[in-house]
Image 1 (spheres, rainbow, N blue to C red):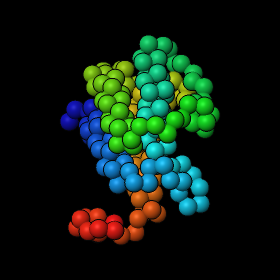
Image 2: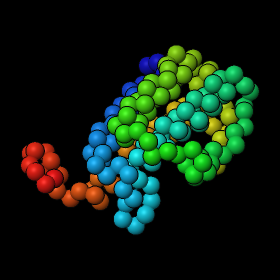
Image 3: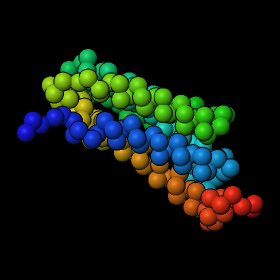
Length: 171
């Protein structure tokens, strides 16, 4: 049997991961600017962060890994980025749509890679030497982490999901 790099399902999973973020963004739209009980990022901040990381980390690093011999990346300070650049503007669902488009670009970088290209490496902050397959899995994991965070926020903000499903008032 021929072995393929990456895992044959990785590309589909990368594309589908944004669908979960899109769905969860709709679930928390009413509370998009609410700080959760106990603190932390608002739902809007989660999706804004996802979009920023896609654009400033994956869209920058993947082309460099393909073009340069073992580039070394500095840590992308997400907290500093949020403090400096985050704006609570735009609807969370618009941000989720922009994230879906950005993820399409990320998938585009990976789509036609040869097996040799998948094995190209870089020095990733906190991880050491990684290859492009690891980067693809990291992009997937990042979206899934924030998808789970959005679902958890939905559960914190609203404990009566059936009312919304049934279209009842007061949901």
